[in-house]
Length: 222
Image (cartoon, rainbow, N blue to C red):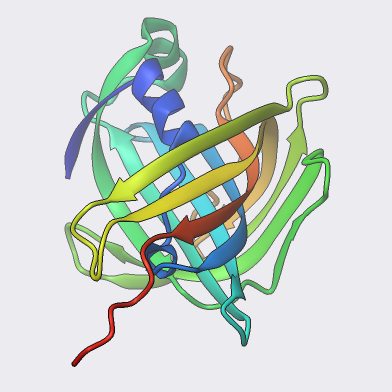
């Protein structure tokens, strides 16, 4: 898959927090934690850009509580084969996906401290290489160190007008902190986080939030 990336779109991806589908139903409350990181590393054919993210959603209402996990990784190469320093200095680049994968299995370890100053992720994510169809297991072992003094609150409302029996409003509030990330993303052959090239922009974040959905009471059928 070919993509055009800019520093603006990278920041937007970090800030984006998807609405879990479980929250679309009225009277549902969830709490969740989310981490995101991008690693730039020079490879034989140009800069490799690897994105990893993980989300854990705990539904607290209605009972019984449930936990959902979703983790993903995307490994891409700069389309023209340029090195990382060149594309970072230019602020925009084109990339083609080499491999990707998702997992809904609980990580071996996924921690986020209450003040978002530290986070960790340990898990194995199945990936498929785009050109060959070869499958592999990518072992992620990543830590996040939150940037002190940059805790940002956020609040939003999203309306689903076509929901039945009437519109459902999702109330979202939480906090986000930019972070530095380090660790290993190893597929048995290559560690995509090794020798990561420094960047002048933030390329990782740690987030927590709560959600509550409200809407009309169910209609009685006669």
